[in-house]
Amino acid sequence: MGLISVETASVCPSCGGPLELVEDGVFLWFGCRRCMRYVKRGKRDFVKRFVDYRSRSFNWSGMMAELYRLYLGT
Image (tube, rainbow, N blue to C red; front, side):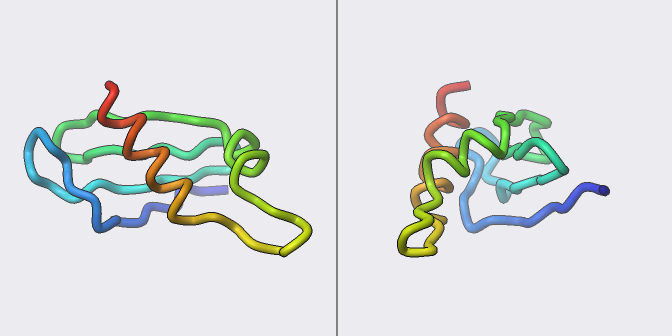
């Protein structure tokens, strides 16, 4: 499986460039292409935390907020 990359509305605090979400079969990366600074987490971690199987919903905004928080911590 190849990489899937999506430009987000979030902005890099260092350079002002758009942050991107990159996905492969196992991991999600979130970071800045200009700065080449990313955080990487396993997709399973996000499924456990942000998928509610009872209501069949995915907390997208919660996941993006968590990724941005992790990115600010790098």
